[in-house]
Length: 296
Image 1 (cartoon, helix red, strand yellow):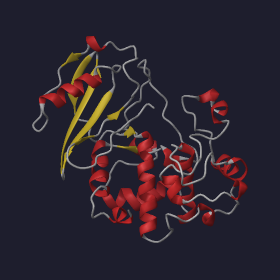
Image 2 (image 1 turned 180 degrees about the vertical axis):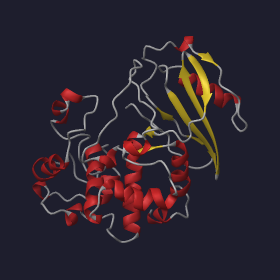
Image 3 (image 1 turned 60 degrees about the vertical axis):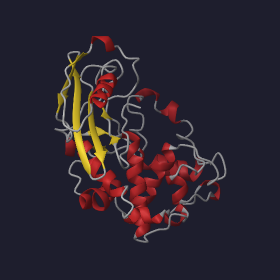
Image 4 (image 1 turned 90 degrees about the vertical axis):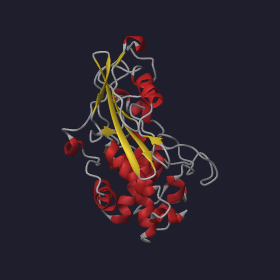
């Protein structure tokens, strides 16, 4: 994946919003990086050393946007590798593709709808579809959210279909393809609810079914149920809304990487967000008093 974040929980946590994550196998020379990162109150020398050790592995123009969280307090730290120099910058409101962290938001939307009794987490998704699932499969919202649906990581044949645009593989996976997969091709690889198997198509499908429950697009669900109530100013699936803030992704060789379009599967990985907004989300949804937590 090109984009990775660590989710804030409680005590001390780090959110790393990176333009790329691919290991030190890039053309960058870690030994060539000059460390000029600045001290900041609340950040220890060891933490600063770890930031430098991580950033030096990646190509020039790679950014880290970091939040150290302790209870309800947070300290932001931004860094960039530029001209083989590691520099401290302010980027807590810079937008990144957060990739599969979008799945956490999709599960939060599910929890919110369940709390408001718009659906039940153990209810079959079939109840909200206007077509039968292939083979009369019975898959619940919960099984899609916790990756026990039995569905594969990606649909069969997906790799072949995306060979011509591997830099943006989901861009042509529209609603009709998803509905066709659900109607004619979907086959759980094991009995739903019995085994964990990570599935992009499963959580993407979950996001789609939630749009059918509420009869509105995923972006509208996201804004109305999470982003606006929490005051998250820069979280969206629409790049046009964060155009001036969006950090350019990089390949492991340091070239600009294409942004990903998720087609009919935005719930699996289409969200753009900032360290500032992710702290807000984490502090809210990992608070034991938060109503989604009461569903556990």
